[in-house]
Image 1 (cartoon, helix red, strand yellow):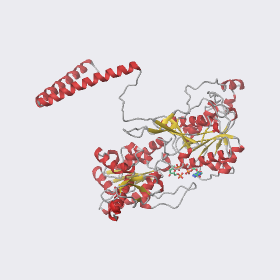
Image 2 (spheres, helix red, strand yellow):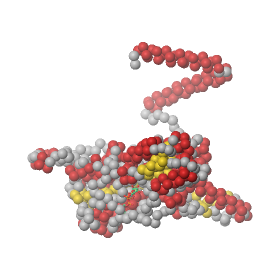
Image 3 (cartoon, protein in one colour):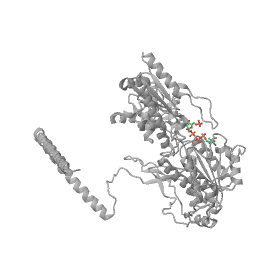
Image 4 (cartoon, protein in one colour):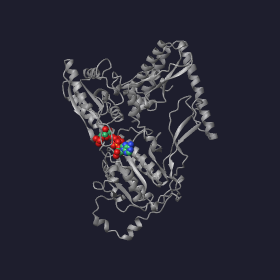
Length: 634
Ligand SMILES: Nc1ncnc2c1ncn2[C@@H]1O[C@H](COP(=O)(O)OP(=O)(O)O)[C@@H](O)[C@H]1O
Ligand SMILES: O=P(O)(O)OC[C@H]1O[C@](O)(COP(=O)(O)O)[C@@H](O)[C@@H]1O
């Protein structure tokens, strides 16, 4: 800034301050000035004390910051991962990076150019010097599960085994054969994970055996007529990370445990890397169990893949962010179409998300352009006071157009659950996108208006894109850590990024019933909610009110005190009250463990708060929370 303008600015600032002080002096009462002066003195005393404390702590090596007495963590319960070392003899070779160089990575080389290097110089190149890791992880290092701590919360938390290289190896790298398979739907980053596993096995660990690329998902282990296993090398995978999809191909169905175990045995595979979603992980868990039953010394590692981001324990699955990004193009197009097509333009975008609305919800919030977002977790209310159609009409009246995002799994409550399934047993979804288009047009017509609705289904385009930079980095870490875990002898584990940016190992078994998005929410929202109020019990005793759904078994809605004489009427009132509370909980679909879902589920059903600008007063939020979670957590 030139000095003259700086001078002018300083003059203006001083002038304003003086004016403010004079105005305050003239308008404030003497009592107010006294209070303010005391506050200022107190603030200065506190500041001085704080500075002295910090200085003293620094001197004694104590951490700075305020000690909160009512937030404590005394115990950490570690989810153990099965360790092959306990069942089979480990090689216990010291783990160092072997740095085996790849011989060519330039995609523009002709094979003849490659050959021009002499054999000697190639050997020299690929003979890197082993170097130690700058950080090795011990098995008792962990990543804390519940990192958000509330005052007076139970003083324990779960911990997950921290991922990363271990000091001693279970498998002798010289003897390792490995296999990689990708199953289920596509997801950005699959190729990055494959590439990283291959590079880590070949270059960092310098394994002596082969890496089998199983083509076409689980089918590729046995259906050799259609899918032949390929041998993966760093040269082959050098440039695959720039492409979407999976070079190995994928499929649904085709899981045959005996044949898979036979393949692993006959090819002496000791590390199997399975990349896929919850279905794939269920399969991987069975392979792990099968190996243990048959005494096979095989490490089975899962890498969770899902653009739906519906894997429990893991903050974010790889590829999710890239898909959210890809969805922005469709939302922007929908907005342009809506603005330009008159009268009353409405752009409807359908996004993937079988039973979890994370993709639709995140894409909506990231875009800031969406007026209504419909998710699988929340039943759709079309008309009435809180209906989405009147809300949409209101938004169109206010701004001339509106944008709608609908997750493909939303609206089963409207259209019914399909009995059809795909080859993996996943149920097919009703056509909610086109249904919403028709409903919007019909509603506007009934109200004497015309709606110009443009329907956009970006469909597979959001999941077939290459991984963005952030996902690529994540895939790299996942691939490396899967190999570190397997080479150290862990088995039946999967990986993810938990609290913050730490990578963790999670036992495969946990994946069996805990996809994060739908199941819990869905069963709450869609099953007929029933609660059990026991009649028995002496007057005044506290009796829990239990949920009867299998998915919620063990959880109680709340408690009640047994009325005197077991009056039928009081019991009926308690039951009705309990059902009302349970339904409220079901509608709000509140899960205090997942803030995003909390946010989406609580806010979205109340469509008078369009998402991008939605705000709910703190007081109202607390009330909702108390009405629902408080009871649920009893
Ligand atoms: N319970 C299970 N046991 C064994 N394999 C399974 C199981 N559930 C699904 N699979 C297999 O896992 C693979 C991928 O499952 P799918 O549900 O299609 O995708 P995703 O893993 O992405 O959820 C399919 O080959 C399917 O047959
Ligand atoms: O048409 P496809 O290939 O069977 O896949 C559709 C499904 O795949 C997904 O992208 C991911 O599903 P999976 O996790 O089961 O692979 C879903 O969002 C979508 O419903």
